[in-house]
Amino acid sequence: MNVQSHISVAESTLAEYLRKRKMRCTQERKVLLECVMGTDGHFTIDDFSQKLHDSGFHVSIGTLYNTLQLFVDCGLLRSLRFGSDKTRYERVQGTPNHHHLVCTQCGRVKETRLSDLSAMIENRNLGKFTPAYYTLTIYGICARCRRAKNSSKNKK
Amino acid sequence: MNVQSHISVAESTLAEYLRKRKMRCTQERKVLLECVMGTDGHFTIDDFSQKLHDSGFHVSIGTLYNTLQLFVDCGLLRSLRFGSDKTRYERVQGTPNHHHLVCTQCGRVKETRLSDLSAMIENRNLGKFTPAYYTLTIYGICARCRRAKNSSKNKK
DNA sequence: TTTACTGCAAATATTTTGCAATATC
DNA sequence: GATATTGCAAAATATTTGCAGTAAA
Image (tube, rainbow over all chains, first blue to last red; front, side):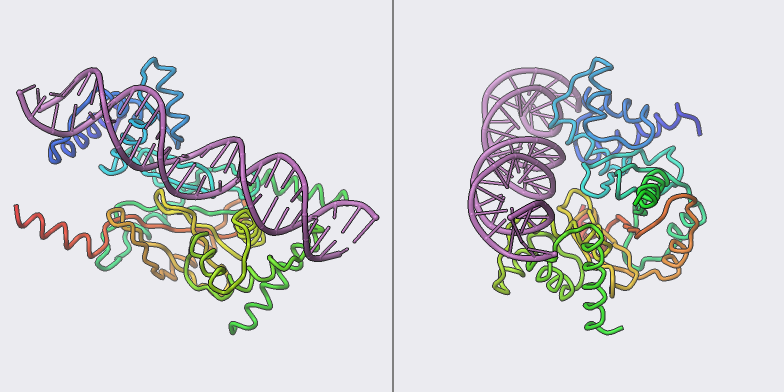
């Protein structure tokens, strides 16, 4: 599936969701959706606010929170929280299954793909619980911090 | 391994960690560790503060945050964040591998054990990244909310 | 025309920080 | 005795809320 069709799928998903709930298809929601679809990887509210600002569009911080939450509710975004960082969001569609490696030392987040694991998780029977999406986050020490730690050990 | 030995293992883990860094083994750290080891399941700072208060021990909120973070740093606790809720903590030792099912409707968190998955994740080679612990959280709709939703559908 | 949505600012909630007092080593 | 840690309160940060004005339907 190409980028263009991802966008139109997302647009109809949103439109459908709004229609069912008698919610409105506002400029803000349209523009934000477009911006979301043009953003790869995960981003914070701040990142996103900056990107919108750079593209010359203004929305208030409240609307930003509301709208991203709306996108989470209709399954277009996933929200992520690592450690005590702020909330991050990432696109669901067009984002291949991946997991996050979070360094507990420097806070860097790396994506990794473990497709067999994904398959195993997705095919899992969870009884009466109906899964929508999942997050697998592995915390540990990244290569860079490990190197730093070892070299400081050697100095002593 | 019984509870008593879990506590002594935890105590030496902490003592070792503190010693290496020339940090002090304070009353607060000792009491909080004991309280943590006597707490099953996940808890928030507030839950924990209340529990301490009930047991007649007082620590400031700042020290509480510091100390729980210290326990996370030395591998005795895991910190968890679901949705936009506050941070929760859970013991690592003596807590069997488990995963979390979070209902995106009502916010309830249920624990589930998927041991084959755990094994798969733990045995995974992540290259230069050294894993310490991981969290697998599955978001979706719980049985109760699903029932509620279906019955409201039928009414229409 | 109705009412859902937005912007703004104020309110809340959570977590961190600065500093004087205290306790550990 | 030196200094790491605590308590407290204030600050910083993140997110939510209330309300008057605006814009979808």
